[in-house]
Image (cartoon, rainbow, N blue to C red; front, side):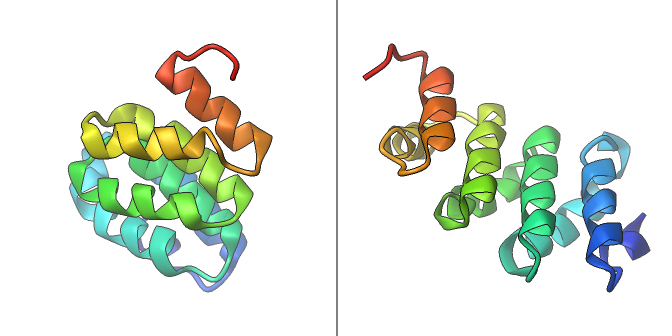
Length: 120
């Protein structure tokens, strides 16, 4: 799987990201690769899949990258909000509060759902 995460074919890398999020036994090996993909991959689908996997794994090293993904394209931002469900703390609360005002309604709805707030 480690080789697949670095595959030059974005479709292969994306599928490997999704699979990595289901393999907690490989978390220590894959988190650094997922962080790199979530931060820097040119393909938004790969970034989205990597963010989702980091949230699924709930590894603390993924937290800053997930928070940073809240500034990416709408699908990545939506996935980042959902990935924050694995984390707690004032930085997560503040990020979710900001996401309530996101211009993408699905991002704001996901933040609202996680915060347990009624419609604004």
